[in-house]
Image 1 (tube, helix red, strand yellow):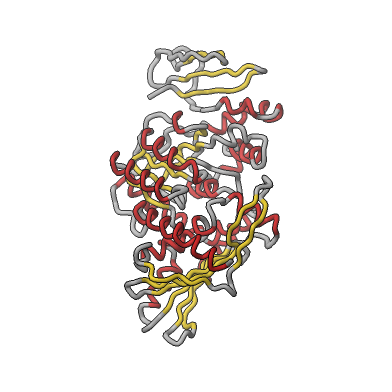
Image 2 (tube, helix red, strand yellow):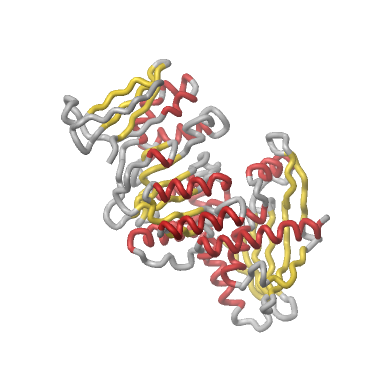
Length: 450
């Protein structure tokens, strides 16, 4: 295994140390912009084993953050190669800002030990450990990374090493799974890098790639290398989806509608920021989970769609400027019904400003609603309240879907270690067809709403 790397700023000079725990010989690497030295347990008096990784990204930090680099360094390396027998070694690629990034919430759930087959050993965050360190979310991210060694993190089962790129990963010490939760546009490159880094399995957040072609290429690359790719379509394992489908099966002529809500403020500023941050569009972002349900359980494919009809009374499409000033056109809410050539019919509704809860309804042959199941249900609301109190500034939808995020990660991690099938978890084949459906529906629905 390569030595452990410690990089930090010393005045105006970047300094790098390579700590070789595996052998007493030193390892040198030429670097024009840094003064480097190697140390080993045998050559360092009073050495006590530790492991830490810090990065040249700290050269982007303010003077205040530069002065705190040693504190962050000690936080980052408390547990390196931490996965134990029976656990997968998880690499989180793309953490995002605390309380806002989906990757961050994935990290918190694993750090709290809620996914027993997963050990979060590495967090790769090139933006906030690099050029975004001083921008929005950067200071909060670095403060959070620093806090992992404080008493506040005593409930965490591990402290991961933080890196700026996949290329800096050492060889796996346990079966390795990469959880890719970065920008959708970066996913094709990141998947290939993770495969090259020895990942046995990839957990890929939706929608997987910007385009169908890119996702198909990712599927083919992974298949060639014998790497399984599973998707973060958590609603495929949701309680409310299961119960709705089970009830609908008992009602002759039933019709199911899946309803998804987010809690953005209904203002041009809030929606404009949302449109820009999720520039792939609502059907490839928020409503992609529902489309995955349609592909998984209702025989929906591009070729099998007979008709799609927008509910114009419910739906809304806007063109709004994002924070950059660039304009984006997207749905702020959309409802539509799909009929398939094989005789199935199902509806989807999604509202960016509809609140925090999602649900599904079943109507009978006369159009009367006979069943409605919420996410969260009464059983899960207590957990939601506890999480809201614990993380009061976090995105509300984290909490309503909290148990499903845990379920998907645990099944993927266990699959990586034992080979046991990740029951209910969508494959990249499902993701490819889901993305095809999203690309097909978007222009059709936009045309209907003009």
